[in-house]
Amino acid sequence: MRANGTLVRGHEIPTVSNILYAVNEWAKEHVTQEKIAEAALVAGTLVAGSFFVNVLHQALQNHTLVGF
Image (cartoon, one colour):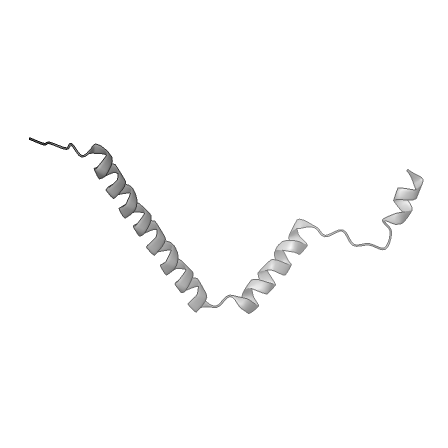
C-alpha cells in the first residue's frame, strides 16, 4: 500500500468540473450557431419522419381488408 501512495504523486487527477470546463471551452470554439440550427432542423425532420412512419404502420396494422 505504501508504494501506491508514492506512485500517484505528481499526477493530476481530473475532476468533473475540470472536464466540464474543458468540454465547454472546446464547444465554444467549434460549435457555431449555424451548426446548432442545422442539428435542430435534422432532429426535427427525423422526429416528424418517424412519426409519419409510425402512423402509417399503425394504419396498415389496423386496416380491415374486405373482399368479395
